[in-house]
Amino acid sequence: MKKFLERFYMGLILVFMYLPIVTMIVLSFNASKSRARWGGFTFKWYLNLFGDSEIINALANTMTIALISTLVATVIGTLTCVALMGVGRKSRAFIMGITNIPMINADIVTGISLMLLFRFLHMNTGFITVLIAHITFNIPYVMLSVMPRMKTINPSVYEAALDLGAEPFFAFRKTILPDLMPAVLSGAMMAFTMSLDDFIITYFTKGSGFDTLSTKIYNEVKRGIQPEIYALSAIIFLMVIVIMLGSRIMRYNKAKRAGSKEDSYAAKKRLPIGKTIAVIALAVVMITAGLVFGGVFRSKSNQVYVYNWGEYIDPEVIEIFQEETGIEVVYDEFESNEIMYAKLASDGAAYDVVCPSDYMISKLIGEDMLSPLDWDELPYAKENLDEAYMQSAAQFDPGNKYTIPNFCGTVGILYNKTMVDGPVNSWDILWDPKYKGSILMQDSVRDAFMVALARNGYSINSTDRMELEKAAADLIAQKPLVQAYVIDQVRDKMIGGEAALGVIYSGEAVYTQRENPDLEYVIPDEGSNVWLDGWCITKDARHKENALKWINFLCREDIALKNFEFVTYTTPNKKAQELIEDESIKNSEVAFPSEESLSNCEVYQYLGNDADKIYNDLWKKVKAAE
Image (tube, rainbow, N blue to C red):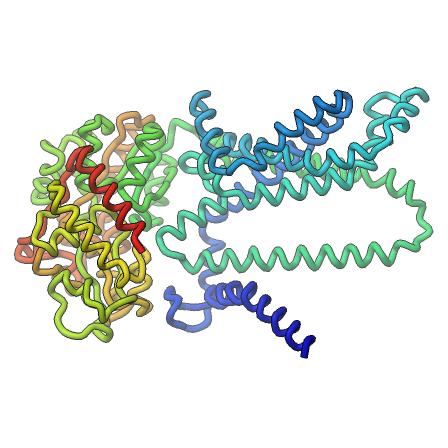
């Protein structure tokens, strides 16, 4: 009985450890994007993964950074340990104590400290800064492994070699290094693992246009986990298994050869030469690859740095632009206006062109963070954009000096007709207890408060403290009914039938209805938000001419149509609208709402810093509520 229980508990532990991984691997072969529905067996996510240049570049960056930082940190850490043996015991203990602080210190503190240092030195963040950061935090791990071994080595052998006429380096290589090598290799493996796995320090030091696997996966997961990520994770897991099996096989073969008559000293004497040549060759290859992938050899003048919403452009459009203009697009994505603002506020020169929404554009204009547009360089914009949308943009950008409308839409309720009883025409349904655990809310300050304010008959741009506190109280009361606060993930959850009701943007609703015909989108009778976002050039843009070319290119009717078909949000490009062939889309109230549908809708206004503080403080209380 005792053995049975032991095996049962061991099996239970293994199930908890490996069942999630098995689930992920199975989903990597699921033809459907939904986790809740099996769409058949497919390899397409693996094919898409290998065809995704961004993920391939992130993988190359990860391996390059890990290998180079490991090599440099191992050399520096080992030499430091050797040098420390020549100082007093108290001094050595003090230096080792200081060295150990980065390992004890929180990664976020190290990351922010390095970020501030690079900015103080006016270094452009990217490959070089990430490499320096990884070398910095890897050195203590190497020293932690090498120093105990160094203390056990008898220095008399080294001194005897010197007395016999050997050069210092030759004596060190023949007497100290062989005994030290196991600890050096152990430290190098630890450094490589830490570098490969690091996210926080990389996140703070990577800058724009540069990603490792950890930061790339993080950006993807924020917008909803894509099947390609399942495929990538499955491949990484398989590689780990192969390495572990290979290691065990090598140890087994080494044990079998233990009785060999080969002269072990001769073997040791021959082996370092081959290893040295291999390490040097690998270092040269990795450094060259790192410089290429890291952008050191790229032309810095013929680029444009773009900051856009996640999945808000057809990837082929970027390729077409690069082919036609020869301008390299360095492209990054954000998931909310607030995240975009924080990035620009901390590093205004990081991007040339951004795509904020109405109220955020007003805020950026008020804080002098945008550059006026040169309309003479935007012929497609002048010719193709619908005047009605230009007038809407003028509500937050008087005179249309800073903004070119990109997409627009509404915020409403998406519901599953098979899971919801009765009509859906009011925000009140999101407070109905019978849908507990089946409601999705937007993880956005303005959108969440918009729902509660509109439900109570208040303006969605309210700055009245009592009205806002009432809205916050309603959101807190609703919290136990909410399955999750999400952004782009509401789309995948609704397609998969994981929720009955969700607050969603109209363009996402068009896409979800294609994937699941049981879904319906409505704008509640109390009213909602009608939003418009647009392309703007930042005040400190380094490539303003290229930014204008980018904006003008996106206003070309064929390109605007291509983006509309990919994104499914309402396009303000009137010529692109005329090119839409699908009559059901052209006449859709979701894609192109009528004036009657928009009669109760308001545009978000920038409410000022004081109102922003009230919203943010109340939002923190909502998110913290149980």
